[in-house]
Length: 298
Length: 276
Image 1 (cartoon, rainbow over the protein chains, first blue to last red):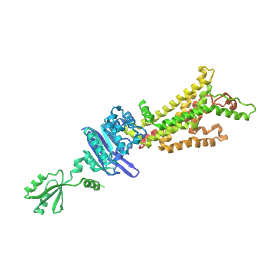
Image 2: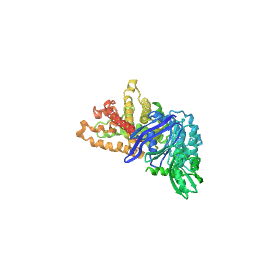
Image 3: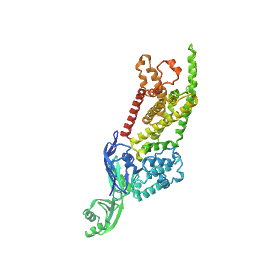
Image 4: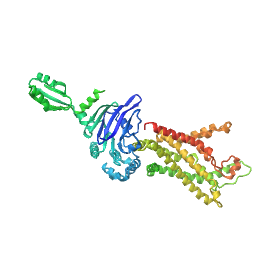
């Protein structure tokens, strides 16, 4: 796997507030990496440090295995905060400036404007665009010159439902091309729908990171019942990977380590002479899980 | 190198405010040059009233003195303030539109950002100077009956002096805009300082007993303005004695150079070390 970004313990303090606290992250090529956290958890500060807008107090980071430079930034397309363009220039003129800075030809401009659905309004001044169009122009600008990495900070913020759907489709389309994506969001649902990997951030620290399905979806429960509930309780406590058990509505809810395999549990109990009258997988909602991750560590 | 200037020119090519202000500047410049002769002759009339011998009217558009006279009128504070406002708008726009951040994010280094603005200021100064030189040549040739190449270009160093004045003055404007970041505030502060505060300071500091080591010449705007300090015509020499400027003095240029270097140094330091 090719390493795109490695962050080695960056920290940033604003007065008394520790915005980013000794952050370590590694992102590999073609990952869709989500930075998930509530507002003020340090997502934007982290992205700003990665793009040389903010100087970290401590720590280093590398893009493409090299210390950060303007050359590495030319390989990155980014949409951070609000769309920043010259209001009195047309979309095309604004994008030509971007292309000049990135040392990229103008050939792509028509194409990225088409992708963003702005081709027909390409000669209009940026100031005459609606908010959604401005946001889409920012995406078009980020896509200019086929970047290796796309950084998106809250890309669906302030968009209407249709705009949100379009933006997500666009991100998925980009991801399919094998472009590495780093997406900061406070919306769990968004990260879950789009990302392959995630780091959950709170108060500038990483609480959890890994593949989305491990971090956000693995915490499943098994609901079991048998005619003799006491015997069942004793038997299941000896199951390898057993974590804890609670009674709920006349059934046992068991938490297990690793992946849950109902068939194995059933077989294990059958060998102990217990016949289950009820066996069901239950998932905690993602919101519950997200809040739990935040609460456990605050 | 030229790439940065190209980017800057793209930013202003279709920017109406830029062209309107530059147009206004050239309008003032033309009016200034046309009125200059009239102003000076009414000044001479005034002096003649108090003098036993009346002074004759002068033509200020003759080679070689036209170089000095026109660059003098082109560089009075009230005219020079217009391109300074243009520069302030161009730099503060980068902050109000957040495009400075976007430029950095897209792959411009912070030092390149400074360099691109310095190139733009250099380019604007050069362009204005070239236009002025062409105007001087045209006006000079049509007014001077008899001239040789020697006489024609004798005082061309004033064109260089004017370029230097304009360039350093625009650096001051750039510095103000960069530090204050807000367009209205920067224009108000810079205009107030250059047109009112400093002339008042100059007047206070220029009390007679301090004359020999007059520190007023070290005031930043004044140090720029005095590079072409007076217009020149023979009668003035008679009026004021030998103390009339006839050439650009390189020593006079030292003070604005030091100011400019310090200002660019501060901007470089802020850009290199601070968050954007």
